[in-house]
Image (cartoon, rainbow, N blue to C red; front, side, top):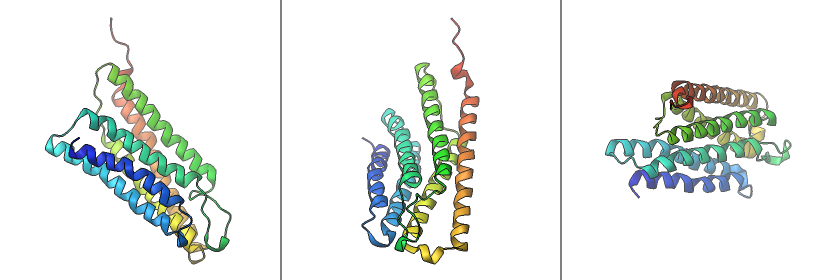
Length: 212
């Protein structure tokens, strides 16, 4: 296993680690969620690092092509499930236990769109593979991934602030933080839809029937 593949494997191993810390409510002050944010950010950085090393050193392998997208999807899926579904206990019981993204249906709709896009593109690539067509990632997909990472990191930190410092950010500050989160989430969902549409439309030949 070469260096890029080892880095990709590290990304996979970091997933259960940040999930544990995000859900570690026994850690006082919500600090577990901040640790989870740092670990998640490190995992996101490995996505940039392994690809750069593989291309620069000519270490692109079939194993890497298999592991990298799986690691990326598992990373995003795990982060999404946490901020959409896992309840946060605000300090002092100042509010009902709610997930980081509220109202819950907003997070649920965003998660469905993001996960549906990944499943559709995975199926699209599978069809391409059966026809021996190699589809490279495009710029739209890379921008989409960056916004997904930024948005999830933001909500991890927001969850930390809610759990540990709700009284300090209650009122206007919390409203502003909520609006910022909605903006990040909206841009992420839009880029998810656009990147999926562009990826399929630019490679539409994959869906055309072969001439016999």
